[in-house]
Length: 187
Image 1: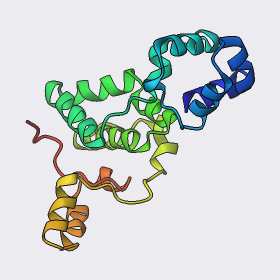
Image 2: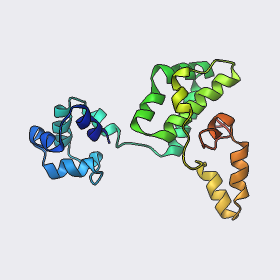
Image 3: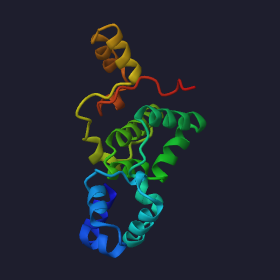
């Protein structure tokens, strides 16, 4: 949660934030413990908190606005389709997207982008960006399958469908426990 991180960074307590922002302590506490989602807070509350934490309201709520992973993958693949492979890599690296997702602890998104950059680098004989070597040692706890594969396996009551999909996935994605076999076939 971004507020907890900012409080720690600013060496400020929830109580101090409450007093300075004039937002009830119970509200601050509920937000910090995930009982209240920032996107459900009033604009006034968001304004008061963001002003004291010295960040924009957009930055404050962006952490609570996370799209479905399938939609995220689709957006990434569409971006790749619109750009050349090289321009895609440059865009991801220049915008520091991999590190941004990593810092938010949005590991599936972070690792998916890193896998995409690594895969495109490999097929174009581009050296890997060593900035991400530490992240490359990470992987998701469990394989992350496309919803279509999960549904098909359940429909046929056949786990071998998932095993086959995992084994046939692109190596760079599989290294992070992400099952992805086709980044180009997007509509």
